[in-house]
Image (cartoon, rainbow, N blue to C red):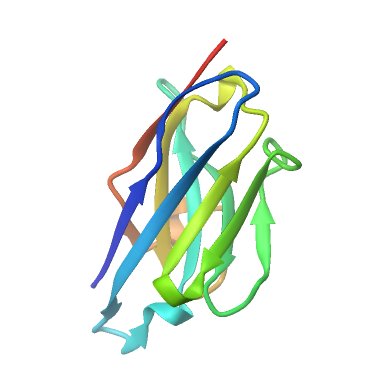
Length: 130
């Protein structure tokens, strides 16, 4: 089992910055794979909207994917020693307001479909005031 815990959400003014963290622990007993082989994605869901991919990366490589809607404003980075993945958000807009979720995929491959992810955190609220 893999446990994910998000932190860092809150209220920020438009144009401001916020960083989210996703702390991962555990390992997949089914596949015998440690967390180092998983891919981690950040998703968000605004009220009345579907959950959407924001950014993702593999634990074991530095390859990343960033959604077009946040490209140039958001970056994703990992602290491998601490099994933490950060989502750094700059130039925030009111439309970035959502619950942000961290998810992990046993495949180790970053994809934008939430169906590919096996484990999810509880989410953290980000509110951007205009």
